[in-house]
Length: 118
Image (cartoon, rainbow, N blue to C red; front, side):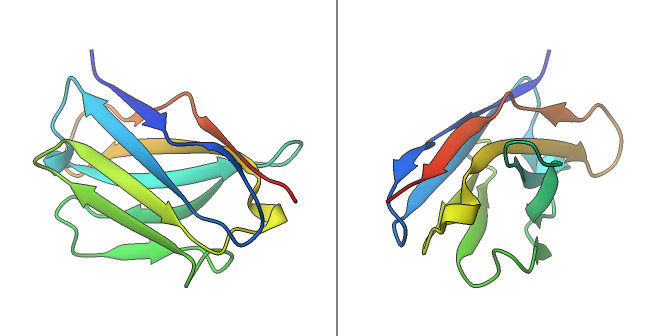
């Protein structure tokens, strides 16, 4: 049974940085597009960054472009989200999502909480 687990969340002041990790098990990330979503309290979940299975294409939502960087390391079966210049509005639960490039199941993590507070 495959799964992904997020880590690295926490509380940080505005302007600070955090790096989230998404560690996969039970499947190989090299066959999966990896994405980060976030869901602020009381709002809908939104995709903020994604990277194709071999890393050739990367997408960022306008809200995080220039501040966040998505990376992947297929040798470590993991993906990452480096978050710099954090703002109050970045506070949310951050989720990792793995979607198959070819066929198979997709996987959601349980999320990690990021709180940006003065």
